[in-house]
Image (cartoon, rainbow, N blue to C red; front, side):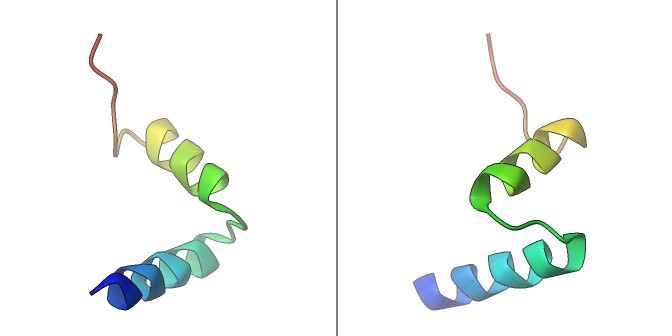
Amino acid sequence: SVKTVEKHRANIMAKLDLHNAAALTAFAFEHGLITTKT
């Protein structure tokens, strides 16, 4: 459910000491968890 995803994201952000979705996205890019196709 949407609430489950939101809770998982909040838990991950807390563990990584990230304070917003932009910081979480930047972290994911920096660690190769997501990439862009060009």
